[in-house]
Image (cartoon, rainbow, N blue to C red; front, side):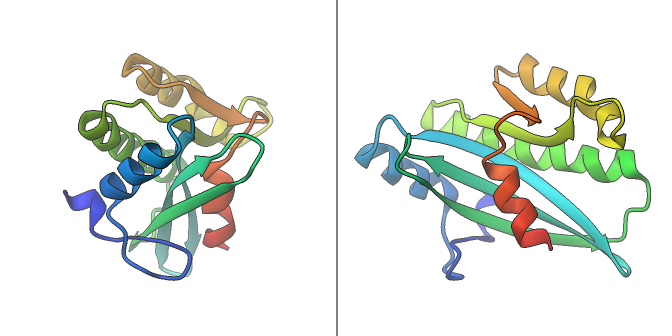
Length: 152
């Protein structure tokens, strides 16, 4: 699977996301799996970080991530929509391989004062139509918070 090639842990070790998620669930069947992507445009490049986060109730979170870069995307809608596509892509791979449905964290805001608000209905609608629970700001953001940290 193309999505699995570049996932790494925070130490930089290459991780297959499906095998890793399978092992996590085997040891911790009640773990919450969250997928999210954030992006940042710098100079002539747009960098995307997609994260799969594993939440162990109140005992913490660990995650793996995939970085990808493309020539700079200046159009905000296009750049943010790609975040949705990347998150749904890996969530679909997890769902189809492991028969679990991760939650999708979208780095968009319900508040109409934020530009990302324009994508909330379309992105959330697409993810919901595929059976995913979607988390957007200001609500809990597990995967996108980690992605945001690595984008900066």
